[in-house]
Amino acid sequence: MEKFFPAPVANFADLLMDAVCMVDAAGRFVFASAACERIFGYTAEEMRGRTMIDMVAPEDRERTLAAARTIMDGQPNLHFENRYVRKDGSLVHLLWSARWSEQHQLRVAVARDISAAKRAEATQAALYAISEAAHATDDLPQLFQHIHQIIGGLLPAACFVVALHDSCSDQLRFAYHADQQGPLPQSLLARVMGEEVRRMGRPLLLDSSTLAGLPEALRSAAGLAPVSWLGVPLTTSQGPIGVLMLQGQGEHAYTDADRDLLLFVSTQVATAIQRKRMHAQLRFMAQHDELTRLPNRRLFHDRLETAFARAQRQQGRLSLLFIDLDKFKLINDEYGHASGDLLLKEVAWRIQACVRESDTVARIGGDEFVVILENVGLPDHALAVKDKIHEALALPVPLADRGNLQIAASIGVAHYPDHGADMQQLLRHADNAMYASKTQPAPM
Ligand SMILES: Nc1nc2c(ncn2[C@@H]2O[C@H](COP(=O)(O)OP(=O)(O)OP(=O)(O)O)[C@@H](O)[C@H]2O)c(=O)[nH]1
Picture 1 (cartoon, rainbow, N blue to C red):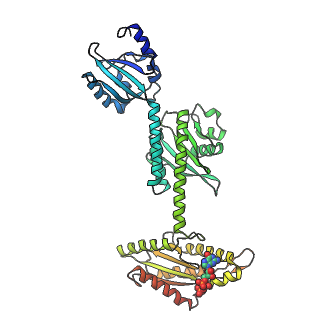
Picture 2 (picture 1 turned 135 degrees about the vertical axis):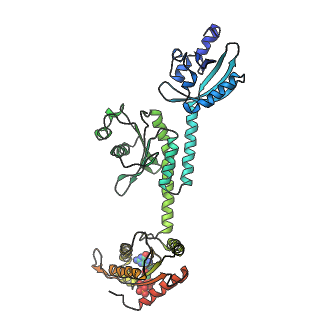
Picture 3 (picture 1 turned 90 degrees about the horizontal axis):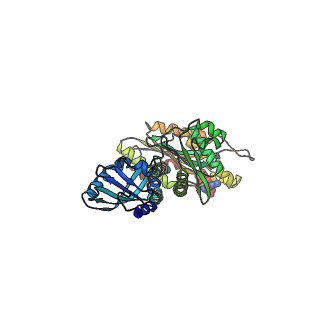
């Protein structure tokens, strides 16, 4: 050191929090101050003689060499950022100021560890991105994919899992489980780990160093030399809603700092999920009937428009069935509104059971239902569905304490293109056919 600085200055250099380095024209360290050990993980002794560029993160090497050339051409650089690979394999973000000493034929540089600031910056950006994703994505699976990418930029995440609490079954439902290539089959370890995080209500770090202190079920699911996993609860202001888990990459073991970071970010993730769920719920409520949970009149019209456009485009067929319960008012009057409600739910369920999943059954009024049958080969097929519905509705509906209810319905059918070239004509035809059938007994 005294070779370059007088002794007192050399002592000061070792007191600095920033690292002072000198690199010769061939790019080898010839001097490193004491702070280097804290920043790079290597002692000054270990650094001496090493080629600087070998310690730079591979992605930053080209930029670093270009900056070094400029400095050696006589232009000092007071604000250059790059990343070095520390002795333990982790990355350290550095801010450099450097200049070339013609007299000593050395690059003299001072490096400041800005990893904490970079991490805070990245965390802030991730929080913002998660909040943005909650607005920009259409549904939860898409949101989870976005969040996977965002958190993958902060922490190693070979595999990313979101498991949400299902209040009906009181179990975790794996809503997202994927690696960079796409969805993965459910793993026993992820399930056991998720349940454990949920049970404890706090983060859990799994790797070979923590294994001994973990519950038996988790130990046996993990095996002897587990890949590192990190799990945190997803909690909103209303309480826990699920669990977020990451699987490390290769040898990487998550640290306590990683755990704290994921826990911090998880609050934003939980809020984003909650917001998305609320939107989905509001959208569902706006489009579905509260009692039967069938599509309502508005969604029926949307579906019909789409089906109609498709049939026109593909020169296909579609049929509409208008269904109105007969004398439903009497049921309400005689058995009460609650029994009427129960009957409407049963009717909805029975009609749905008569058609394919791709068909639409909607409730468009008190006791009025409608069915859109797509891709019906011949009008006879729609008539067969109509008969099936009549039969299904003719079966008695048992009431808990008041015997059986008997119900019948009037059904009008309209076929495209036979009964109308446009939607209004078709709707009118089905409605008229339904009223016409009210005056006739239903075929049994
Ligand atoms: N329980 C119950 N009843 C409802 C609901 N919505 C509408 N209603 C009742 O459904 C009945 C429909 O009566 P109407 O349209 O006269 O039909 P109807 O008695 O079946 O007569 P027809 O169609 O001529 O055979 C009314 O009494 C409404 O109050 C509901 O959500 N629950």
